[in-house]
Length: 65
Image: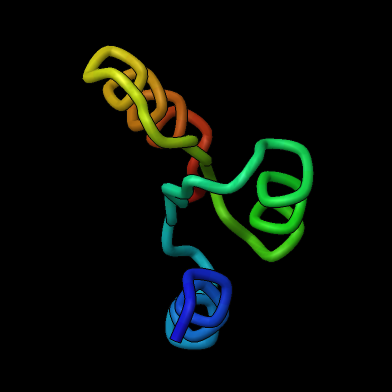
């Protein structure tokens, strides 16, 4: 099961779950696909700890509770 399938399964279980996708694929195609399928955030490998923290904070700020 790849990340896209995993995201779909998570969305089936909980539509409101905040999912941050982490991938090594290029930004343009992967990011668009992840966000269209309900990801709340996206990180491209490699990433720094500050980037991870910023993404988590932004996701928490804009998530629906």
